[in-house]
Length: 507
Ligand code: BG6
Image (cartoon, rainbow, N blue to C red; front, side):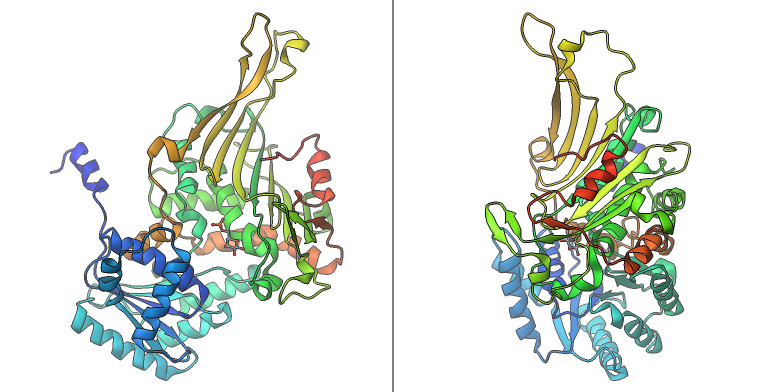
């Protein structure tokens, strides 16, 4: 039997998945080039991929295996920072294949099935399959139905068949339920991996590490000591070339339903009994269930949207949203969202969670700020504590990943002046290691069959359920307040938090 220490050592060993094939539907799209192939290449370079692993791209464009490989090599040069080892590429690229085909036609699946069986024989992939849906979301049900029709969903003779679903996972509660029903017609829940790349970020996982591996935070992580929480997902970029997609999505669907809700769950959840998929996800779902429903006729009390107009970001003049490519000049799509939510349970009753997410804000920053109550009494004279603010713990997801705790300290000198200062932990300097890209972690977990960092069906539906009244109210009203690009959002967002006597942070 292994001792506790050697067991821990075992768990620390690099995890190498079983042989298998990853089939990417919509392989000529952006995600394959920007994220999937760079992440797989890095895993190959770290020898995390088994020799018998293969990638098969499926898409309508006519291309040979070599054309596809060449495109991916270019993409790697474009999207991955750092030197590419041609030796690694040479051997990794031999495991990449391409099959042109229309995912709406049954013939494509017949051909794919034969091709995969051949790969099993030639490369020893042992019948293990990952089907990655990275095509247009409208095709997800069709692809799944065809996979099912061809019997490619079955897990036989110990082989696995996993389905990866990229966001957006539906566009409201009903469509998410419908999508779940469609997926589950052919795949069981344990085969379905709904991906949210935020969960692959080390710093997002660190929310759990910080909360549950340190004894000092848990006693004060509740409504008795926390005044409020602010979650910010700010981006300086606009919609760029993704206008068509964004017109359909908007900030609420693009960022809040998934990334922000996940961060909220990790911040607010109870300690899971163990760090396994079901325990962790169960606790997250409980948070979503506890979020106080937003009354549809009072949405303006707790939700604000905005749209960026022409302005300046980092000294450069940028277009307004309505002037972006593939965007209607009179578009009512929101590029900014602020919300005030309550989590109605014993831990958080009465503590507001203020959330904001937007594009074309002054900088890119994702952070969670836990704003603690002020001290109940200060023995110091007023003049001595003018520079003192209540404690704030900031978990910085990106960039400058780290944790910062604002504390009061005596200003050096012969007087007794107290001021707030930050105690900072910067990941980069503490660990001297660069965090891997989120997709690396998630693709590896996927191959290893670990769904902890993937979204369960009831999580996706729970998050939509919270936003449903907001979406309904917004679809009826025409008013989308503008904000100048390069500012922190519309005036109404300041009013939302200002009504409670609080202010947004300036991260
Ligand atoms: C994606 C959104 O999910 O997340 C994009 O579709 C957004 O609009 C991106 O820019 C932000 O991700 P990250 O990892 O850069 O914070």
